[in-house]
Image (cartoon, rainbow, N blue to C red; front, side, top):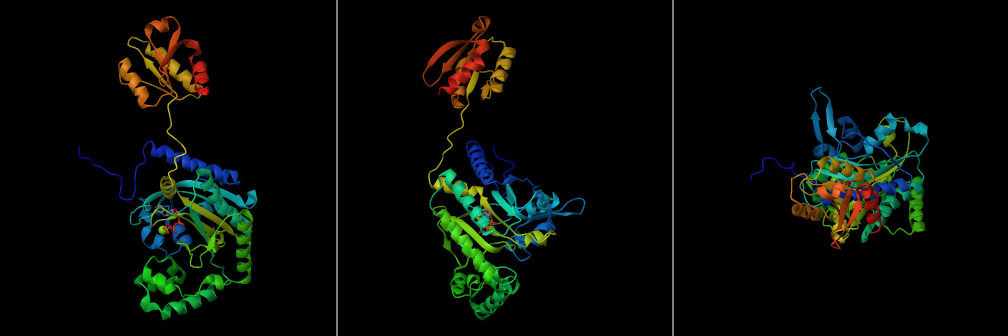
Length: 424
Ligand code: ATP
Ligand code: MG
């Protein structure tokens, strides 16, 4: 059969068991956020295009070429969100969360969209779990944000990663540094790629994000912002570092670490994993002390991170981790020919209302084929209903693993099933 439709390039379907593994993984990440005192926020997948142009920055890759932007029939320009921070800040402002007390600690999970070149670890639709703490410039909050990623990795049993840390300064110290950098870039412009020459003019810090070898080589001698930050940023960075040391979180300072979005200030960080290929950054974030103001709110510092779920899965796979196992069906109710299907339906519903997962045959199969189906579903217990047993008010429990079976009063099926499953 030739298929007519395929998932769009750079997107993919998740089917069982992968889908359930990812669901559980996201759940674990969200639970860690809750443990750290963050509250869930859900924003639309669509936003006004201006929100992203304004916050991420006109000259970034995301805004110049990666956004899925379209005009709806009402003439409004909308964009499929490429990231979660700007929408969360917008929601924070719109809901007036400031009046609930600061900091507001929020987390989110969901799909993001960027029209990138698809490759291993890089998709056009991908999922992120992320958190934002809005309203405080306390460096301990940066430390908390970083340790939240560590907590998620720990909960999943992940190892073999590196935390890279840098600071990108503030309004006070960045302009002078950017002048120095621009002068340097002017001197070496012959050795830079076309895009970096462009960046040098419009958004010089971006050059450190270039993946081209000759640019990286040339930039080895570039002035770095860490050496040029003001005393406020310097102190802040020192306190982030001592907090991490206090918690025993290993890191290395990477003076060239800048992020792909313009709103970052002060702390920036990335967690990189070995063994997952070129797209090795699984979690990343930093401070964005001007974004709230930029989006129309009062001057409010903030810090956040986001984690790529697909890359998290790649890291789990690379490290041979699958802590979840297969999800099994608790009970399969098999009806022998001639059984009263109405009563079977009733029993199915009673079992399910005990919180026991249950299924039955909908294909008019014979008993043997039903048992085979129960096996396929990895059912822990089969409940056999036959017309004669039913007449006597009995059902038969069959333990497929032990090849054992015994009779149980019909009225007691849900309770006995619970006992049986609990004893396993
Ligand atoms: P990268 O340098 O890897 O493109 P980025 O700087 O664009 O990352 P962020 O915008 O900070 O990344 O997103 C945070 C995380 O989301 C990344 O570290 C990564 O795990 C994930 N991510 C970003 N873009 C993609 C994508 N196209 N496909 C899959 N995951 C992605
Ligand atoms: Mg990117």
